[in-house]
Image (cartoon, rainbow, N blue to C red):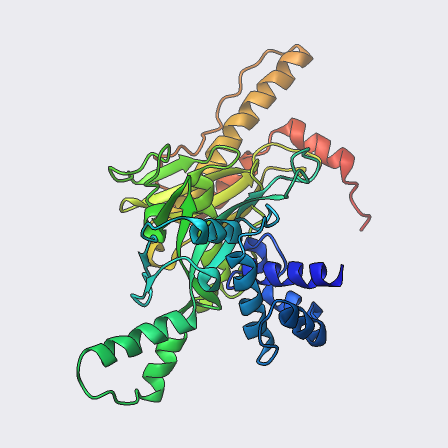
Length: 378
């Protein structure tokens, strides 16, 4: 039982290595490391015929590599490790290789650079939430420090020139192939095919609608697992990375697979997203923007404003319908006029947008909110 617990902790650490806990379906690396007793880990490594010397991380990687090489059935929730195990069991065949968009390193999937990427989870109360696994998980390829550094040193050795010790700043740059606080995600495996990060953001997959280039504008994200949801989570990962100082206070979006969302496209790829609730429910009494994000290089070009205006227009349109239905029920039968809606093609500044917000909520919704949220006495 003790060996199973230690083995499970080792696999959880390998499955979440390099990703933030919000995008890993298992515990974060730090949590697993703090929960492991090093003496138990040493005993576990000895039972596997491995050296029990070295750091905790080194022993965990060695143990996981041994478990995968044995080709024993692994728990199904460890999607990436099962994929690596299937590669080691296949006869011949060339392993897929992706080039890191950040440092240029060439990477092949192995235990050291693969992790489980969480596409999304089912919301609380959904019967699918705890069925087998809460999240929809796919393998991701991670560029770790040693991959980038070793490649640079091997190129210098193979060039025939005298190998000189790199300067400290250069060595530091090679050692930290990261996006902000996170190890760089190089690619994702979707529908039995590896896709580079740029391919994902261009939706170049079957059913994604890409390939010929995306037109500027908004794309509705269907509920459930799909390539659009994968792209949304990639943007969510960028938003949490704190790669740019202005994003340091950004809170990670809780991207449920049933939550309404739209992607914003510029220059043939996805550059931003908005998640929202457009009708009152038990969690949100008012139409609510849950999260909104635009990649830094695409800011100042109207992407955020377009998403905000689309949200206001869609909610205002639904509010007009609700008010008409309310008036019909009351027997007045009057049509609502004199309330201009903010349409998708309208150019509006932030001042006009703020002036439009009070018109979003129909009187019927406001009455319901006043009944459910009592005002405090002054």
